[in-house]
Image 1 (cartoon, rainbow, N blue to C red):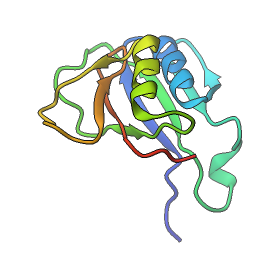
Image 2 (cartoon, rainbow, N blue to C red; image 1 turned 30 degrees about the horizontal axis):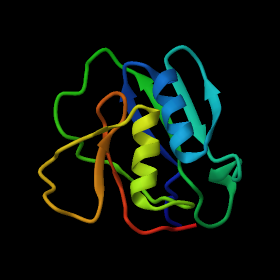
Image 3 (tube, rainbow, N blue to C red; image 1 turned 60 degrees about the horizontal axis):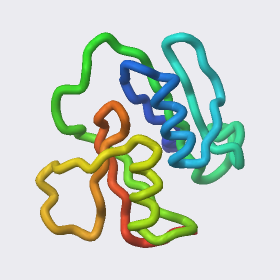
Image 4 (tube, one colour; image 1 turned 60 degrees about the vertical axis):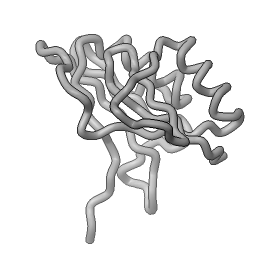
Length: 128
């Protein structure tokens, strides 16, 4: 039997603030929280690790003392589901994201950074 990808852990300074941002981006909700750790996930797929087949991964934000210093080696890609890429980019900028330059050049995706500087890409294709 293989492993199932169920959760991505993200180190940060403000777990609650970053969780709020990503809940708004992904239409997720808080699943569990304490002072130093917040886990968010899809409200449509509770108990993901016990479900057969692929599931949307939960994101866990853990408070750490050190700040981000270099480009992420792992990042999220998001796809707009109900609007075009440029409209989604504007929505994410309004939520607190900012444009990021990681040397991507002229590509079909847009690189943004979340409020703590973690890069992510907004892809051009719509996937409902």
